[in-house]
Length: 455
Image (cartoon, rainbow, N blue to C red; front, side):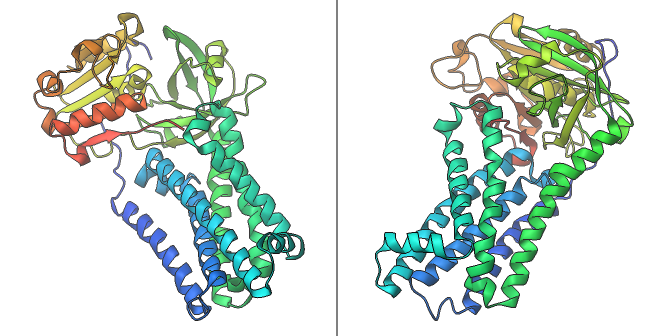
């Protein structure tokens, strides 16, 4: 994939039906309504008090916990409908909501049982843990979930390497599994209701099955089928390295320009830790390419990869694709390493000569990557390349510091911006600023495409 042989696909990918997202949202709402209805059917309202309220908060917390698992189970239809950045945000919100409802469940159940037996609340909690079936396991599961929640707080995440955080986050699955027995053995809604048992067993089995099928089974099958290996490793600029890969039957891999995979390079210690990298060239024939910036974590190993290194992948993921683009003006706004998925989109989108503009933000000219390829797109497909160079200003802006006050910069750079499809990729703060600028310039929400890759 050199500058003189840039792969280009002119057939746009098949769009994901919009009703996929509607069905997913309705299914989640129905699951919560079923939980409340089953609680009411099991005398939740008739016996309402601390214990009954504790049952309800525990049931809703469990339902949200399982929905949280499903959100990140990598179910292809769900990924295609929502995109990983939206799923990750909902996963986070659902997780914190579930956790605090679980805390309320523990407190209200303990106070309710203590009031019924005229006992001290702390003594009652101790007695429940040691004498009720499954409660020791549930306590261990709760402590694991506390660990996951604490390390998911933004201040804590900033102090952890991505690989460390990801490993700790996997303990959530163990926490969910350990919480199950106490519901089966002592939960009123399990013991006294066949309908409740059927619902909860179905939800637990569906969640576990989705994780096994799509987090383990599907990636294992794709890796066996496609057998990716590294063919070339090429420096692209300061701290930037491109990795070229080949494999078997890659034309059958459902990857689109703009998507990313989780990558594991089998080159020695540390191979078990996956990192997300976007495709930096349009998938073409039996070839793929990613470009990685050295950020000091697992990405630092990429520059030392050797041809022949075997690779394991999970994916593809992401909705920063051209599936809804059918032609007309297109504007791609990139900052730093965010240019990689947009470069792959330049090769796939079916724009006409002069219809595409790439706005490329970097601190210095030395940080501009893929100059030969960008020149090829400018010469052969009429892409207009706009570079914005300079350090950041004191205030957050998508523009360099010396231009940060120009609020009308985007429509001045691209007069047709209001009617264009706009794709934005870069660091989170920059992406939010660029997105706001596009909205202020009149870009419709359904034509503004972004995907955040923070964890």
